[in-house]
Length: 169
Length: 393
Image 1 (cartoon, chains in turn blue, cyan):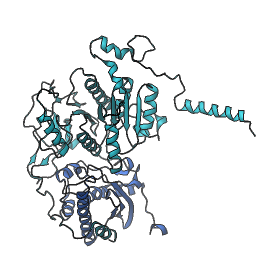
Image 2 (cartoon, chains in turn yellow, purple):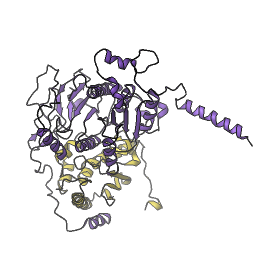
Image 3 (cartoon, helix red, strand yellow):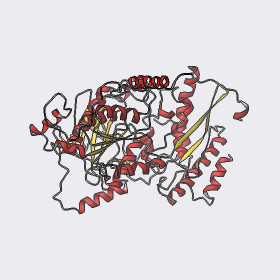
Image 4 (cartoon, rainbow over the protein chains, first blue to last red):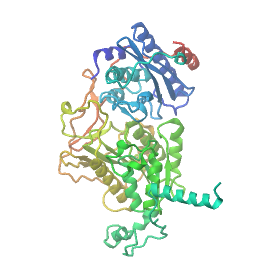
């Protein structure tokens, strides 16, 4: 079940209008603009709530996305690379968010580091096609996943805090 | 310095070792031109051709002209491919982008020494050695991405032995995205296919025959699930994504290939939907009509084409061997997500008892459900400007 916090976060992300996937040419460009607007608003909301937790960008076609997400645990910041493709069935099917750096480190993952979402994610997504977009997938999928999995992985010693080195900015 | 002869000897020694290591060391079965029904120890097809003598199949050797695409070569797909190979199918086209892992060894077909190889290549090598008469084509990519989807469609529509569309596509994938991608492709190409699946708790499964326009497509309704009779609250998911059993997967593969053979060779009845509940040994079957309001526009187009045809070509025979009554108003939606969701709606599916939709979709798709944030306003900024704005945050 979606908790109150997630519900509140979700409700402040603007809904999308255009039902179009990457094979839909001009309509996809319209959809992509909506995606970016949704993401920009969501990141702004996060910053205002002092809960900035990811950055994302895409290639020109809007089908390959990559970025970083991070999680603060005991005042230390743990950062992870994030990537996913937009499948040709989008937005009927949600994007499969992946943290390749954690592949093989947790059972709550499918091949290639795709995060394993709860039983509630897919029905909620399906009920909200085409209104939900990437920002909603982040808020509803990756956010709660990090909140559950990362503290657990840190406690088990599977992931360790890394001081920022020169080349990682 | 070694002489050339020494080096040549060394090379042939190493080649032999490599072949042995790869399991190709034994005698290799030669190709066979024509399927013989002669009953001798050396004829790999004698027991299959006996199906003709027993009056089950009229034309078994026709199988050598037929082509089948198997999408997903995991627990179900690999066994499916092996069964078809042993049956002497003309051509198999395999798709997968995964590698063999030791974690797969609770399932059939793959062996520990294949760990690290791509599933399609490892499978192709094994299958080819089992039956060299089968033409095997391996595609190592994810069919759901923009780059690969068109390649996938082309290989299905031009992949048969005669360069035309394959005779059947079998979906043996393990995720909703890939099933939807196959559904999209098959609706567009007007390609018949079977969907198959095993539940994540490994104790139920199903197969579904999809003839675009004639039977329900995968997008006509939310995914169907066989009731597992497990109380949701007692189902523990802590720390795992999915369980699997070789038994359930073998049973579903068997159902899938059995119905494939019946369809390809024209014997018996082909089930539109066949479910399996392992805990109760319950096998519901039913026919499924397409949803006139299906979200997939090609599904609706195929329905129009089918409706325009003269009624005589009734392919969709109802197969309901179960005594269970068909409930018109079933109990939908086992896992309703949102307490304050609008009235849910399920297309008029006539589901057999024991099969449910995994979730329900609201009637009025324009009613926003859980967001009060309003809709995005049309932006005056260009896509490039928005991308730049996001980047500079």
